[in-house]
Length: 403
Image 1 (tube, one colour):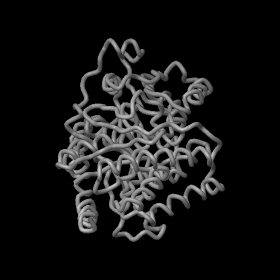
Image 2 (image 1 turned 180 degrees about the vertical axis):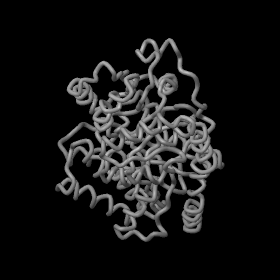
Image 3 (image 1 turned 60 degrees about the vertical axis):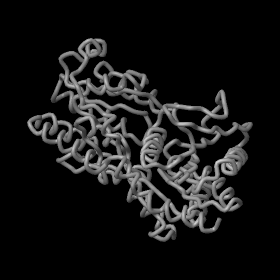
């Protein structure tokens, strides 16, 4: 079976999107399938049309000249479509597998129709909801409605839809897509790729000013939906009760300056450590500095519908965390067993959850073991990728019969 994937971007760029993609591709290859991989112009300018990264070969699309909103997206789709048709004629895949956003699905639909190749579309998040969080549009705006209409148009024209969680599946079915044509490929982890958390590097601990302290932390991108502002709002009350607490924020992003200003306003700047972005190879050293992770995501369509990777990665490493009770978290976390949930949007509830976890360290070994067991037995890529098989085989068989 030959699958041609159409992607927004890929490794060597680092994001949850690229890590999920790489895991899926490796597991599909382990099943004996041939996979080919095209990235859209949003990969950016690259040195060559073909690039080998970590054992995977990626075909790149040319980057068109930028234009105003609307024209720019049209140019991106045209560039993707031209490169995709060239590759599809050369590689003769059984299935075209477009991954969100819809800017990849529409070129795949057009090429698939011309060449008689089935098309599947995998939605990891709706483009319109991501735009709301990034501040480029508002829910219900003309752009929001237009983007939503494009997504629905594409979903009605592909042969099958994949998505990452039940929340997104329900939304897709509510748009009039038959439930039998929507399959969940759950977020998962490569358990073998994660080591159980180790002892903190004492040299790094002193460098960060954390010696002798209990550390609450977050590692990732500083987007508004992650709720780090709520974590900072909860921190003064925690400090008043536990003066040895420190907050370690590893990463960076659009909210960086706002969060630093908030620490000054709250009078806790000397108790909060911002590391900036760190090399991927160093991330585990920073994780080891953290006693308790916090995932305080705000409640919005994006977080209610989409399951994140971070809690699963934490479980794979035997790490403890508190998380808001948004839908994306509740689909992954067993409250009190693999993590602790708190009422989303409430700084008081977050502070209480952190305090309760710190006061009950005797249960930590049991929770660590439960989290690790969950990803080993349930949320691993072998289990998730197996859900592609029936759909791929049915579509590939149809293609061969037609040929």
